[in-house]
Length: 106
Image (cartoon, rainbow, N blue to C red; front, side, top):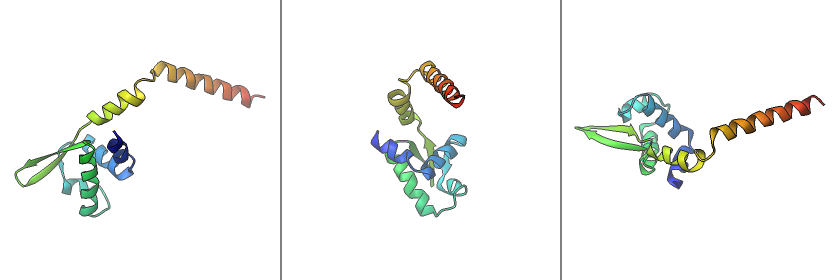
């Protein structure tokens, strides 16, 4: 899970994941079209995403296509986010807002 957090910590890698979410199965060239950096830099980011298993690579002839693998993100959700029930979070937000309004009125 550490590799996943490390991979997600970088804005460029999150952008690459967003691009693959929008259109899965893109080549390096297609992904580079959306970024202002060298192919070499994009390749390094893709390798980190691949090591974290956030993307999978499939060769189709001479073309290397990159696909989003959302399973590690789902694991993070299950482990770190999902355990906090939505109702409790909403109730705490409402309480916080109410307390802030009461403090502002003093």
